[in-house]
Image (cartoon, rainbow, N blue to C red; front, side):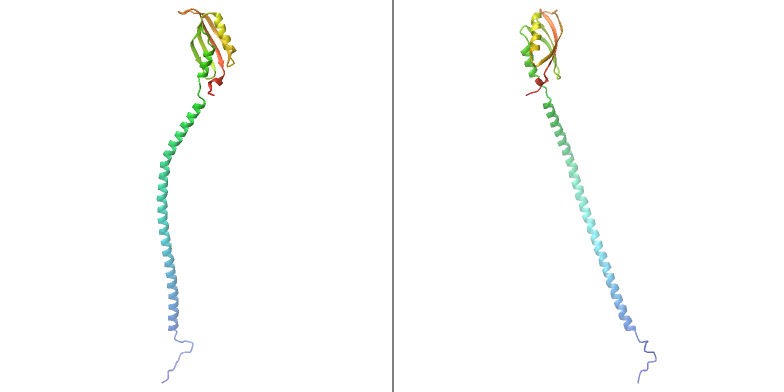
Length: 185
């Protein structure tokens, strides 16, 4: 017998084609889902890798900071030592050498006079108190000081007969010296 199809030709059995389309769509959707899951897995891996690297860098940063902090103490010690050296250098540059002035005082004093008190200041001012046997020798002492090129502004402050055990005249003098004598050459 012959099959008679009462349906129009437009209405055919499309279940097979529908199954194919559905499988194709499901396959594409599965591929997209797998791609999304794979991309998500890569992002999770990269995120954990980045967190691990961040943790390593923080630990390294902490160790570097600890080293820097420990070096700061050494650096402070070095800076303190450097400051001490600069202070010593400054002191040696500005150190006063009194030996030149003592030599000058020794060269200008007379045999018949003696100094009881010599006061010297770093600005070049000298105060001398002493004893001489006569006014003539006191004059010679003042002349000796005045004629020295390193001495200037000689002033006799006082001269009087000695009231102590030694006979003679006590005197008091002020004068200035060249400050170049205070510096070592």
